[in-house]
Amino acid sequence: MKKVFFIIFLCLGLALVLAACSLNPANSSLSKVLTPDEAKATAEKFINEKMVDPTNQVTITDITEVNGIYKITVQFQSGDTVESYMTKDGQTFFTQGYDMVENSQDNSQAAPVSDVSTKTDKPSIELFVMSHCPYGTQIEKGLLPVLALLKDKVDFQLRFCDYSMHGQQELNEELAQTCIQKEQDNKLQSYLGCFLTAGDSASCLNTAGIDKTKLNACVAATDAQYKVTEDYNNNIDWVGDYPPFKVFEAENQQYGVQGSPTLIINGEEVSAGRDPQSLLNAICTAFNTLPAECSQQLDNATPDPGFGTTTGDASSTGGCAG
Image (cartoon, rainbow, N blue to C red):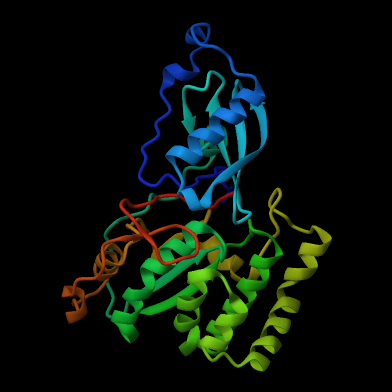
């Protein structure tokens, strides 16, 4: 399935709607057209004051004109970059660009559901993320308490998107997490609980008691089998600017995964909030018979995107996709 080219980043509950009149040439003469430098300063001030936490300020590293609007590259202190857009008069800022032409050629992918129609005694949960995607880490933090509650009543599999957006560190981390799940699965949740707080893999391997010799052997074998590092170094099969990660390529194609995060329950893509209670509610719709755990109340505060333990006041629907 063709990839839909879009980038979404942190909104923190702010509803940003692109009004059609903003792109109407008849209105453009009524507003001053900002120069690229003026637009850059305006966008940077708006994002830092209105959209992100004061401890995670951003800088605008690039601005170009595309189809009559400004395309802006936003860089976080973590080093992550995302693309956003602003009308040339500086009146409207929006965080998602959607390729209408490409999408009109391929609309076979069903929309995500909120309730799972296929019921089973032991639901399967497949979560596709990028290890350093702020929204992938967000949903993982929300899901861990649910997995700790339901335990072996569900079958959980952590998957990774078939391309990476956050450099070689992400490829290395995804190889490591793949191998932990494959050979030391009983330690995966402990490792993730540590890793998601600060992204410190080396420390968390010790915290979770991972057998490093076993892990290193698995990583080397998996890397060689799927040519992760080789393809990265030789720029083979990149998706635009992003290197491939082919370990779960078949599963990505099976579900038409387009970005991080993508939640699959019993083979159906599910749309749910990223707080523990919302995720528990969604998973519980997949049981033939509800277990007692489904009546328990979990935290309904949504984890903030990225690494850390803080929570916000609103849900997020952001994702990493290219």
